[in-house]
Length: 116
Image 1 (spheres, rainbow, N blue to C red):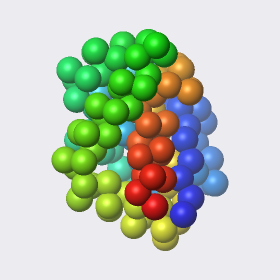
Image 2 (image 1 turned 120 degrees about the vertical axis):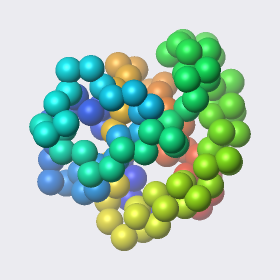
Image 3 (image 1 turned 135 degrees about the vertical axis):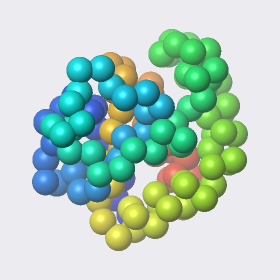
Image 4 (image 1 turned 90 degrees about the vertical axis):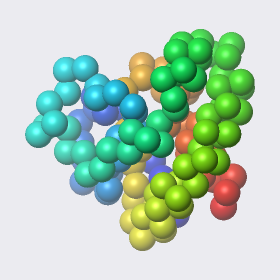
């Protein structure tokens, strides 16, 4: 299984495989025709309430991951589809956050890896 992470603002590459945007909001300044996004799973993104509570504050990272995992438990069907896709080919989870270590894509990848 191959799941990669990438900022949506970074240049698309063939090695990205299936590109999946996992933010609830469309990223600012990104044109849909230039983003080369194959799938947008906004329902798998953290809820607006959780996203605002986290506020990209690294001191809230562990709490965010725990709460996000609980939300993902309720989206099991979509998570499973993502896992099945990753078993077939490379999947790149796209995110817009500036912090590449503390964001929903990192948390989602860890969640999926724990399922495996």
